[in-house]
Image (spheres, one colour):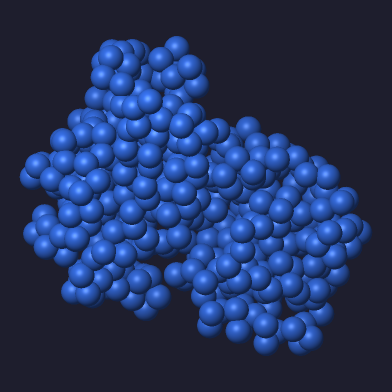
Length: 395
């Protein structure tokens, strides 16, 4: 049996890009034993100065100067800039990443983050590897630097993203709307009564899940504290992820609030926590909101990262799957209004499930397998552009 190698390249600036890489990795193996896939996080091999020059300024801006990041993002969009940094930054700062790709000699490279897509394009351009590149996006809208001549195919999160790419010159035949890759477990229908019992939660009291991502800027501890104003016997599940400082802040709230508060660090049980919850309060990251859609969980979106997440907020709010508030003090009012409107909450849940694409990772895997097969790849490019799962060449 011929084993074909696939490199899944990401750049772990945010956890969502790596989560997408992981679920695509698993989906590739679901299709058979002829695949050898390896996920590479470019941050694991990048130089120290690359982190200082490319990564840490982004993190700093999100926490300290979000207006600066908004200016950079909007300027890049308006000018249709095709790079997030000069090529030499990736060439020298990620030299070891390119060496990993050269040593692996993959038959396909999948990129799940915008900088990773630029690294992959550079590697192909400079002869580090000779294989197709599949760009897998984790946002509902996209950015000009994704448009690289070396990228053969795109799996995007929404039809809006597809329209953006075609507007920037990408052939619609090279784009499939797959949705954002999430773990299919988020779409499972749990026995909620049993799940609540297993988690030690009271079925008679509302359950609110609060998440904010590991990088900020959502003040999760302040949001949790504000929920006391609701005056309802809420059960609050607060997830700090790998943010140790945030977890310590949340744990200090134990016993100080008229809430039943449970604090979680990094956990693999987010599908269960979402299934047990009546409402999610989160910043509008592409992965987290896509997971909530799959779970049919209504959302209150707050404190978006300037640029992409502000667009996610407007997108999901406009489609009826979420409400939005940008200020902590308005969160309790939004929570109370939704919990009082049982029919409205049910309608939001139904709308979320209608928008969900829990099969996205497997759709990406189907495209990846087509790209590995030269004849199927030619058919893929020749077929009419459509959504994954709706065309014969993806069956």
